[in-house]
Image (cartoon, rainbow, N blue to C red; front, side, top):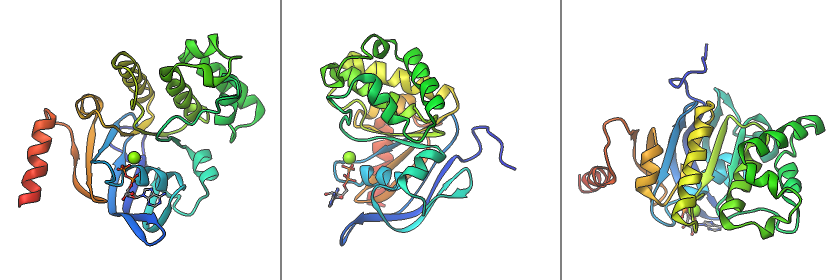
Length: 245
Ligand SMILES: Nc1ncnc2c1ncn2[C@@H]1O[C@H](COP(=O)(O)OP(=O)(O)O)[C@@H](O)[C@H]1O
Ligand SMILES: [Mg+2]
């Protein structure tokens, strides 16, 4: 029996290969996300990080491999069904609907919910993000960059996901806002949600990470718990050691 403790695996990606037309952008990727824990996916530009997240969400083409949510195979589900079963994605670059109001954007994030559920989820979002409540009738395009990022995270939280994936959520944000985003991640994690985070700010990412997966040219080069890993320098040494070995 599965229990809802951190030792059980919430999301498991097994030997995933995926890509675009004739390009296999990621090959044989294995990673897992546990309840209430953060798995950070690192790698250079073009390493395949976004492709991994998109394929888990059902938005990029899988060539082979399996995706399990709480032990159930969701590999052949539609993006809509994956979202409904507990996987949410905050995509790279903000995807808020600029001309829609904040509240309309939240409603869109909860498209898999019933009307009643959606209304309750919007209230939850306002409790978590009071700044969004203050601007609920404003067009999302008028929000600051940081507020737009909060809105896209709030959208992804609308269906009550078990796993939330965030693709470079701090990109382009001022340092003070970066900390706000990281604090939100910590609060999400504290609720038992599993987090799969792609982040360019390696030190900040490692400061919240329980597991780290390093991708290089579409392949996993390193995958381990951050227990005993103290800084990026150490990770880099491990990485370089593996490469030369
Ligand atoms: N829509 C696409 N069509 C074709 N190739 C793509 C597309 N998106 C990404 N790629 C290619 O797939 C590889 C991995 O890209 P990506 O997953 O975006 O990497 P990362 O997020 O780590 O920067 C790169 O070689 C990139 O050029
Ligand atoms: Mg990317």
